[in-house]
Amino acid sequence: MENTDYTGEDKPYTLNEEGLLALEEQVGAIPPSLRESYKVLEKYVSEKFIEIYGQYMTPEQREVFLSSRMIFVDREDLGPLLEYFEKANHVDREISPIDGVFYKGYSIGVPIGESGENTEGDATVLYSGRVTIHVVDEEFSVPVDIKFLMSEDTLSTKEALDAVYPRVNTTTQGSTFIHEKVHIMQDPRLPLPIREAAAYFYAREVFRVNNWRYSKVGNTDKLADLYEECISEIGEDLHRFMLGSMDDPEILEQLKAKFTNERIKEVSEYHEYEWDERTHNWIYWDTVSADEI
Ligand SMILES: [Zn+2]
Image (cartoon, rainbow, N blue to C red):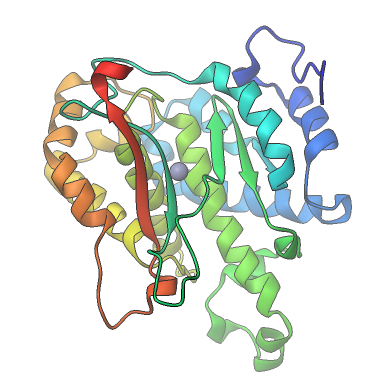
């Protein structure tokens, strides 16, 4: 991948449609025969998002959201891409930290249990400007189909049994599309836990409104709950602020007052003992003191 110009533009983080296709050609992990089904899914869930939240966005923002912006890659291709896209990281000493703490990244995993298995996960997702790169495991390169978004009881038993993997994969990737595309709209200088909470919330909400199966459980759900609390307190302007059509320092202050470091820690370590730890999805934040940024 050396000497590759992905964009033909000065700014790699505003990759255009052509650049995106060229990049996908080189590093795309989804087999070419399945790519069309992923694009159909991306378009479908994006339209459903716009039905609910498009009213808080500008026409240009809606257009960006509706266009194809997602590339799935294998883990081994991530390294060079990370290096490449690092150029687009945005940090602001005032906006980005929460009470002196800067959140650099995060991973999701489970604590090391008695069995000795597991660990914190590796960072698997990065996004940059108007393109989002998502890492997939090979086993998930299975078809997706929008009919599997519907709740199980709309499928015949045979259909449901025949399609366990496509079904799981469709709901997983469907929510991932919304999550990552929300990131594209956000001001990248905002504190990471707040951006993540919002992205998890919007994906969950689009699924809830459409009565689709949503399988995320655990701490990312708690993070989404915290954002939902902010919506009840701040109101609809929070959507405008988070989706990029409105700038308001007061809203940022209100958000930081809710997303304190203590509350983020509490939510990330949330635990219900009746749950299986392996499915619990703790959130591990990678932080540094704001002085170091
Ligand atoms: Zn995210």
